[in-house]
Image 1 (cartoon, protein in one colour):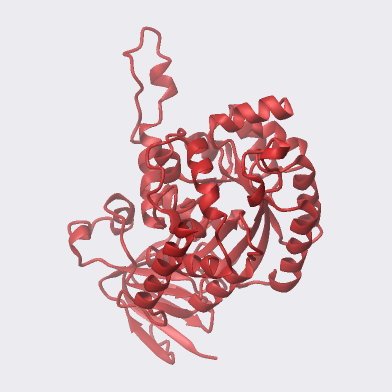
Image 2: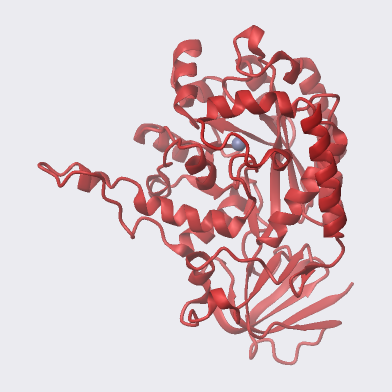
Length: 466
Ligand SMILES: [Zn+2]
């Protein structure tokens, strides 16, 4: 048993049920759990094994990234100016050279980048597993770095010879996918509170798997408590055309037809949604991972996040893969989520009879606090977690701190929390995950970053040479 008392916090944003924001705050942590949150006056007289003075810092809950493909940081800045279809067809052959070592090294780079940008829990959707790759390498990486991790066992089973998009050497047999998914659940899925490791089943997309695999994956997940389901949906117009041509329905209809709606399901992107479909997501508790960087990078469109939130859809944020972002920065994602809703066409303005032409946006579309709430509580809820996403007694000790006395934050004293979004992106100066100090004074405590970057470079050269 050990205790940590964080004192003199200049601004403590709890994101708790009352959205408390505390000046001159303090936090008491016992082992991996928060025991008390309040003002310095409220925690007066409390003693602890260690005292950390965070005067001059803002503290908030660690952020939750709910959509990523970590291996893609090996192929950043590729296919810079083409649409998703070309992007995928170009990258599939390069990714077919991946092996377990490449998966492990790229995951470590992605996780370090995420942690440095305020993420304390992440999922990773690993859907391409050539050369006997496994998810074990990413789960090991998360353990080493101390990241709370939800590994999504992705899969592609419908190759080109079966009418799918990926080349045949990038797909797996469905019975092998399900067998490996079951192995991962039994080896790594921990559904207890404060768990550091959970498994998600995640067939890749309507154009790379069969309806049979979607149904079987759902049945397998639902036979195990806390195993959620994840996939891409309504990401691109070519996907809508594919669903129309192959399945005779819209992408959301496809998801419904295979039993993929419910509070244990969330989809990345969900751009091409009608109001009725958004209502269906809200009514069924189906979640959405909003990935603004990737949606802008690939020119796909603007997800209707304002409408989703107003209708009660659970929405979280995802950085998406590093080949379509091309970074893994949660503060940046929160900032772009806020900005992008503001330039989304305002239907009231554009539908005005004899209107002024063009599309108007509105600065009221999404606030900085709403963006950060999606990045914390929103993602936690979608992952099925009641122990992360906000700071309160009994919650996991996952919190981050940013120094306020720096160039990009100067002049923001009246609202330092909004400043993290409006003036960012920033890197964290402190990160605690499950009570463990991962970053202190802006430096990783236990990670050889230079060595990691050298390994990444070596792996990248090998992948491209093949
Ligand atoms: Zn994705």
